[in-house]
Amino acid sequence: MGFSRRRFLGTLAALPAAAACSSSPGAEGDAPRGRPGTPGKESRRPSPSPPASASRSGPRPLYLGTYTSAEGGGTGIAVASYDPATGRVSAAGTLTGVADPSYLAAHPNGRIVYAVSERADGAVTAVRLADRKILGSRSTGGAGPCHLSVHPGGRWLLSANYASGSVAVHPIDASGAPGERTGLVTHSRPAPGPGQDGPHAHQILTSPDGGHVLAVDLGTDTVYTYRLDERKGTLTEVARAGTRPGAGPRHLTFHPGGRYAYLANEVDDTVAVCAYDPDSGRLDIGEEQSTGADGDVTNYPAQILVTADGAYAFLANRGHDSLARYAVEEDGARLRLLGTVPVAGDFPRQIAFSPDGRLLFTANQRSGTVSVFHVDGASGGLRLAGEPYASPVAVCALPL
Image 1 (tube, helix red, strand yellow):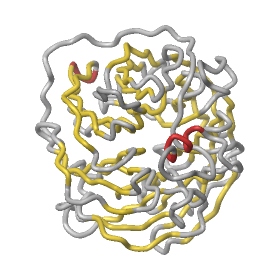
Image 2 (image 1 turned 90 degrees about the horizontal axis):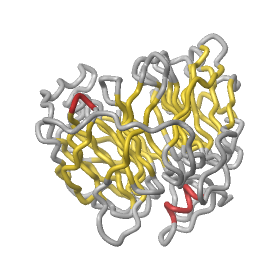
Image 3 (image 1 turned 90 degrees about the vertical axis):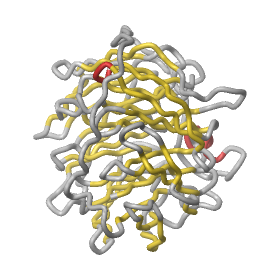
Image 4 (image 1 turned 135 degrees about the horizontal axis):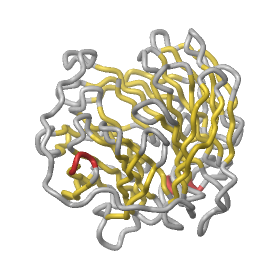
């Protein structure tokens, strides 16, 4: 299938790939760019208490995505468990029946996991965790779906088709299974940016207030904002924001305050602070800044996360093979680079916090490993929790 540069990047000089999408570059934009926030004194916040549901006693489940069609890849969704106190990961089997499950997301009820099938005939699949039963699969209407998320109400499944540059909506029924697609939008404007052959939708997520759905497109260098009709399951565009041409935006994450977000640009190796207006859905992308990936290595930022208290942010650097650490200041309006920490693996494709925020997992695609770090809530420090866990072509980690 080899139609996606996403996947090509992940397997280049390591594991010869045989299919779709995994990490790519982008293009142009058409919204004015501002510079949200100004430098100032660092704001200090106490570390948040872990949610009641995130008990630190006893093992917790961990699900790992892979490419089943890649040489050396897995045979399905890897099932493991982790110790919330030590970070130790133990194998617990494999959930077969889903092809190329490169990205995973959980339903808000914690009982269902959804997976993309990152193939030319893209699909989304629901798996019930209690008995590992596949509840159903549906076509995304596009090629190479590489990201999906569940709308906070739990009634809609959102997915991004990288290869065809479109985003899709599926209803979720009472059992948790996806229904027939109700919405599909292809990013036809603006035109693809430098080095791009078309739109490449890389992510779709809901704003913290639930009022808007945002789609990050690497091929058009644009973040699109939509309103989701929660009766019909359709998307209507209400705003768009463009990066500088060739930035290649890949992943967006919101500050818990809901007024700022952080954008990882894969192609030009930068991050940017964005101001967000919840009323209009407008995103204002600020100036690009360093990922900490200094030196001669070619680096592709992958994913950026913010701690639950909004005090620190972490960025996965593929190529530099590190985690960049940032202090979040001015109530979210500013990122200050603190340094980088080696990821103890090769090509960290995706990162995720444990539910209590005390652990950070990195899925290292080329080394086929998952590294686990202890997160110091007071300093934003990261400490490796033992040897990385081996998992073939690890491209997504979902700790529950």
